Image 1 (cartoon, one colour):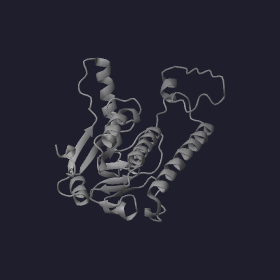
Image 2 (cartoon, helix red, strand yellow; image 1 turned 90 degrees about the vertical axis):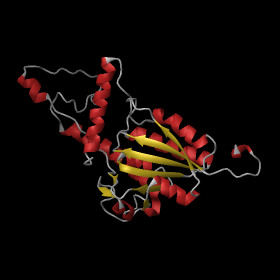
Image 3 (cartoon, rainbow, N blue to C red; image 1 turned 180 degrees about the horizontal axis):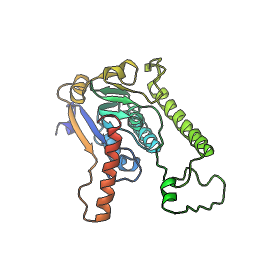
Image 4 (cartoon, one colour; image 1 turned 90 degrees about the horizontal axis):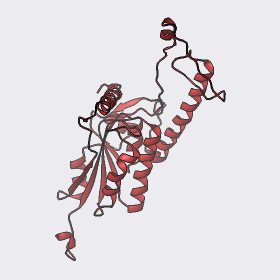
Length: 265
């Protein structure tokens, strides 16, 4: 009731948005601009919070979705004039760090993994297997560039060169985002944009984080011991009644587990 009584100052409030998982468009249980939009809108606009805190635990994923989510966070922060703080748990790597960089300040645990400012493309080549099985791959296109890196055909130098060009463009965009958001906080370290990762205090030393710290004590230091927290989190998918969806969810979980495993988690 104090919020509605004139001349009585209400207790400070921090809206907490949890971002857990890989970043992808359309996947159940993954982080995407569409899935996070209602959470972020409520966090920034409901009740005019004193700050928004992002709990981030993500090994990355889609560069486009990472960019869209980060841009939405900055846009809402500027429209509402609400500061944003990112708190890294196990990992904020690649696209996960891209999202963290949208915050005004970044905090990490002593064992948090940050960085991996790079772009990766991975796949399989199955053309030898097809040949052994007596299967012939047939592809017809209108446009010489329509088919690239077909996993059922031998890899070509031209395709690899085109892929490297695309990866380089994405990497440049990622680097520009981090330089713009972190600015002079970044150390002059030659490994900063090579895809290297840093842990805890080492991430602070190179400018990828501002300090080692946890959400609740840090926010109490900023806003006082009476600060209240409003939490927003995606509903994670449970067992579906439909076998096809259950299979899809299982594959998503396997892919997510593999992404976290890249960082020893």
